[in-house]
Image (tube, rainbow, N blue to C red; front, side, top):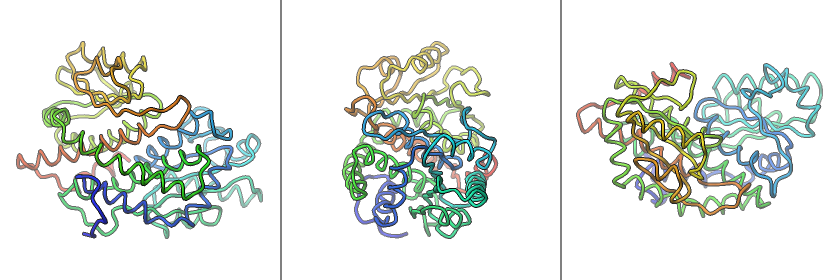
Length: 387
């Protein structure tokens, strides 16, 4: 196991994420950073948690109104995406926008969906000899098929993941499967979007990273070591289903958390659902609902909380505002306060992802204490089935 440079958190993989981000070469990030700044349309590509990380960060471009050039952010799953695949959509995108960036987040560089998007766009560019498109990729594998395609039409940034660290039961040190890359790319992309908002040079991205890591480590440790967090792990250990919900960017964050919790809870015979999903059942007494909302005043989320509690479910809320309706109506709360003006990028969502990320880790450790050790190949099997 490689040595970390310094400890900012008791959760070992957070320290490794910090080291990996500061290993990124400035001159490698610069061209992708400039492409993102100048793009009028950003199309997001990825799979699973990598896609949710990308969507969560880049969504801050879509909601911001000050300091941005006009940008539209799309994914192929959006109802308004103008085609059944990237090749079909490209002609209409070219008609609407001056410069389009296909931004892909993929640790392995082998995921089918983003690879197909890059292949389709590369074919369109070559068939039509257009200069309106560029591609960008954040990956741990700069020699992957996806990286080779993107490099021909744009820029590849290497962000290390777990690397040579072998799977083990030390989940607090190495995370579960792709945690290090997926959380690292979320952090990096959040700082990139904030730096663009502030009109900083690329060095400003790393200055923001340094500033945020100084806060984030203690924020994680304070909450993970709290009585509230231990009570949530107690509930997760019991036979109960878990429901997670949020609107907008918060929905991307809870999906990241749901994937990892599902890997463990499904082994125990329980289920994990996204609130108001197509297959979401009514909760039972004792089930847990995890809700994320910066304001704590989002009406649908408050309604989910009220209905859940009326059915004798337990609600755990993460908000960015003290004394919000959601926080006061929930059984358990974590407040990640952040003072930010409307229409500016927020760090709250990224921080919520990091505070939630040790939940499956702590659950796995608790089960191990009871004699039930869950090796990573079990998670990998569930992962390969659902993604």
